[in-house]
Length: 249
Length: 249
DNA sequence: GAGTGGTCTAGACCACTGT
DNA sequence: CAGTGGTCTAGACCACTCC
Image (cartoon, rainbow over all chains, first blue to last red; front, top):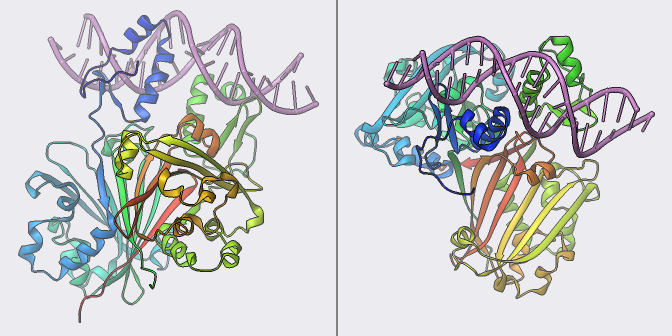
């Protein structure tokens, strides 16, 4: 009835709601599905349905972030280790964070070949990366990054997933192989999650994900990285700020 | 079975699928719901379920668009009328487009007051605006724009919805009352559509919308417009391009 | 074992579309 | 009118969690 419940509160069970409302359980479930699509409630099998914490939004400010990362590249390593990009976004310190990284060597399919401007079948390094708070289970973003294998092979450290997290981010690692970025394009979409993504991000299958396809172009015009960043649509938010040129007075 | 059907094809009816598959109609409907959430199929009551046209994506390049709009402000009106922002996005000419505009005078609620940095209850001009192709029924974007009423009242034309579409866009109209923009911030989210939005944008209730909250700040640091732009998540895409500063050599 | 949500069935009625 | 999707019921079984 328009009321508000404290986060973590256990809802009455579906059968109980059906009995007390005079509706069938099917109808009650349909109603609850709406609440789930809005991320207001989470159902746990065998346990019950709980009110979710208020949508703690993750805010990514990509415009500033990219330039900020670039500026950091030329700092010495000690400086870089102190603060990473995730802390930049969330305000959490490095001790609160858990990392996961996983490297594989794959061949470019037609779609990725077009995005990277290479031939289909070209060897790529696929880097799956996520980070989450030690106190929460689900990551806030998951990143699938693709780089031409021959390019990164110039620095063996870049092929070693145990060297994660990359100190200073992707731009610094590219710097070690002589690459300077000139431009980054972000392409933003929303779509339903795959079952895997729903589980990993701890969202209901009915909640969309926000995705960013980030394309990094170096100073010679070459595409050096394509990354797909996936975020839970009910908790994530992207911010882009544009400074406009002044009219001549 | 992984096949692909031509757009517009009529699917077998739900009862027919239930009979031929040996499943109940409820289960068939659940399966179809997945297709709907992906925007692959559209159900029309009384008619049937059709395969949707391939997701013709609308691409908005906001970073360039905002500066482009600003540059156009100082051109003379004849120039401006030739090409508007929608044509800039879609490549359609002005003859192919239908416009809708609707003005109301409202009071700022707590949320909008905070966004506009005014007191709650302040009079606002609410401008609902959309444009769509003459050959398709549903708009590609709907915009809900809010401006302080006293600000725009300085030019009576800005209070007259019949003067839409604004020749040269919002930035030109602000120019007529002596305002130059300094910065535009975009805040991007995804969420389920309201029933009204689902109908207007011609999407299934299960398909999320992509929203942009656009905040325009003038050269004195004042927020002069807040606009909420709503797009169908299965057909829209946002692009932001960032040019990075060079390292000193 | 009792209680939860997840899945499924078989059938009913309604609102809407075409002819 | 017959056929479509939208909504609803009443009941079953399963997988899972907790005691």
